[in-house]
Amino acid sequence: MISRTACLIARGTDPYRNLAIEKHLMDTLPEETAILYLWQNDHTIVVGRNQNPWYECRVNEFLASGGKIARRLSGGGAVYHDLGNLNFTFVLPKNEFDVARQLSVIRMAVGAFDLEAYHSGRNDLLIGDRKFSGNAFYKAGHSAYHHGTLLVNCNMQTMAGYLIPSEKKLQYHGVQSVQARVLNLCSLVPEMTIDSLEYELIRAFTAVYKHAPATLDERMLDQHTLSMIAEQFSDPEWIYPEALPYTFTVTERFPWGGVTVKLLVDNGVIRNARLFTDAMEAGLFSLLEQALTGCPYLISAINGRLRQKLELLRDHQLLQMAGDVGVLICGRIRELDRNAQQEAAASQEGGDTPTGQGG
Image (cartoon, rainbow, N blue to C red):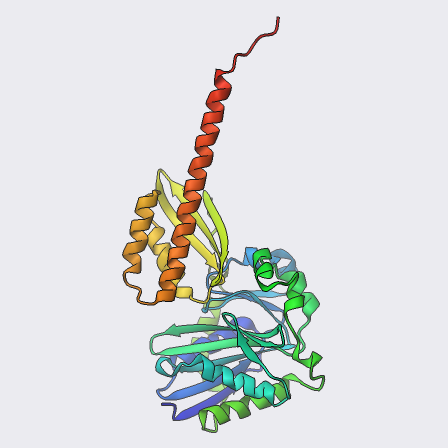
């Protein structure tokens, strides 16, 4: 049961420090406490835990423009942040985590502007058929957080210029561009500002959790710890995946998200496996990478390893997702084997053809 609430509004716009504050709030969360954390990043692209920035955005062009690229702990897709976007985070005990309740705070806040929002798909809030908020989730230890974006007056042209949307994802949503799918709230309520939305979010948070929140200041937090966590978030080794000479690649989109599987196969053994995905369930794909790494490059061995790893899972949705990935990998191996056999047969036929008939 939640018996205390608190609110922290960060005024800095550095993504690495803001992500560090978020993690520190989660790591030090007192029992029976819910925290609303509001924050903004300036000219930043944040990718999901299992995404490859090189697939999601025009990295070199964005960095040259003065932008920053960050990787968060939660799953989901890449998002663009500027000062026309407001980020929110609910930090809660894991046993109090309730997505519907948390989203009711957002819906109540935008409802104060006579806007009716509804939850759609995996993680979106929409008005009409257009998205103004994407959400993601992370759990560790006894705590969890639910965070998301709120597009108030974001520069859509800049967003579209740097993000690289999946063609299959656009087709899935029945749109031709990122801009066609998203919505700035100020286009419906011109007088809305970041400050006015923050005010309504705090009011709604108070109403939903039945306690007036204590005001937190980031200066009250352990600055040394924050600096260390921010340094981890800004580390290029965290943000960018290791560049390896992968020998196997397959990409597909499922109802739960898109996935690209890359394997480095050497002497019949999978030496390294990376799964890049915008799926919400970030932890699952680390398990799959562990299962595949060191496995013989054989369909029977891959199926056996995945089954062994998945015995630990009790969630039907996670089992279905893992099964989809296994079928995808094995299907691609069969396809490559067929292609190799056909090429070998064609080469053999070509070698049997008489040559040198000229006089």
